[in-house]
Image 1 (cartoon, rainbow, N blue to C red):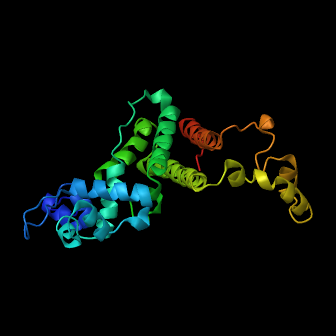
Image 2 (cartoon, helix red, strand yellow):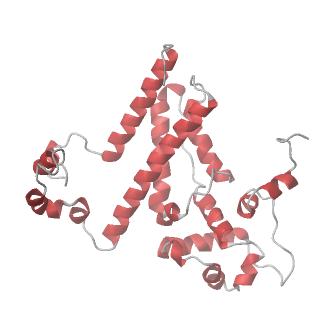
Image 3 (cartoon, rainbow, N blue to C red):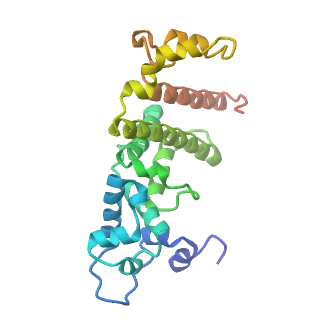
Length: 265
């Protein structure tokens, strides 16, 4: 048996407990009173708590209490809070994926991938608060990676280029998703769109931003573009779409250079 050929039992030993559980490789311990919970119930309750109170509201004690059990009972199913967080991430990524498009619609496919990823951050605001500790290794998270790779199946790219493009798209989705999440949170907390965009502070900024200190920012503040004034003159319309289209333009240019035999670096 070489380094890459391992049994399911060996795979379970090499994965974090939460990841092994997500693959169905670990069964809850049998000791103690008769089991009346399931891993799915525990994870579902933890997500419910996080959706209402954020990630700080989630603890093994809080989840167990909400289910009518003790924290020690929970540990027979999920060994630690870190494993619980991993399983929560995994669960909310179990979404329906759009149908596969024909190869020539790769831009639309990548756009769907980014928008779908952003939706997770908005629907479950705590999702982005969980630290990234490594590459995706759980089934639904890997399904997202596979989704991101789907439009590149027949492209003239090597595996490293494909994975780098998935990282580019997912990084953009993560950044924009967390930004939109923070806007949602601010508005829910009582802020207005005008306050968040800075529109209420336009006059003050015009008085404070001097051209000798901010030679590049000054004309943008004076035009109203910095705080979103004069929307009728806005040629961007949607920041998310504008940024995403420029990323897709870059990928398209890279592909054109690859297919024409030019240098793609």
